[in-house]
Length: 329
Image 1 (tube, rainbow, N blue to C red):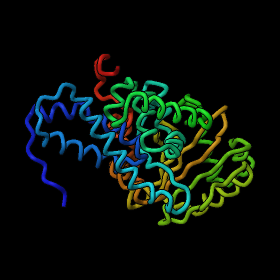
Image 2: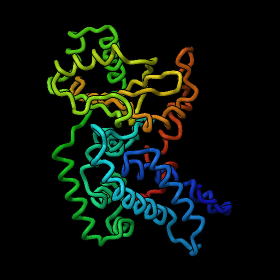
Image 3: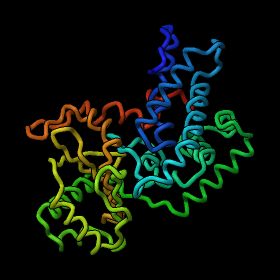
Image 4: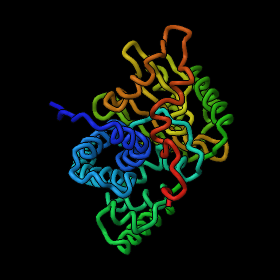
């Protein structure tokens, strides 16, 4: 049973809603799960309206601290589950156009979220709050529960780890859309040569079925092996494909009668597809199915503007509405 939410004052409710998008953006990047991020934000709301001290100097700092510590605690308990996860783990995809800032846009990609999984929870928090959201270390220290010096060290270790493995992707959405369409045609027609021409030599295919849907238990590496694998999968895929932008990247969403059956996200660099990430774990697609509720696979209706830039797009992007400059620093 969910806890009863006390009726908030109008000011408390308005103050929280001002920062809801920011809180979701932090929690989603911390956890790689939109569903869990929503739970963290809801718990932060409960703590906000139940607080005993009604004189809060900075509402944003107060709420960011709550969400950050909730996420750190959640990650500590979730780490065991991730270790025993069946096959590759991928983040829960969200409908999100790229945020305007380059760092925030890059931090939303599935590849970046997977990199964050290699960090400890405190490293992840310090790095995200300072490097991605731009908070000074004295404020990061309050949110993480460490000293400013410790947070500098945490962020520095995280930064080195990420910089060693980070790959930048092409940011041209028009080219991404063209490549996505070519990819869909090549897979749908079984054209091996055409598909090989779209893939980088060292392309990697990752599949996340969560042990609930059949998927490759290990990454498929190399253009030829990946092409053969993708063409074989394409023969068995059920559902109607739709182009979309997920996590700020070009993607295909496959719909069946129950909603979203699977998603496929493309990493594009140097005009080639360098990685293909597919998610078919139903637990990670339930929220996306609700967001695509207006899509009718058997009809002509496609996602409207309000869906393609809906709540997940605004929330995962970070600041909504944009805080005053003093709040960003």
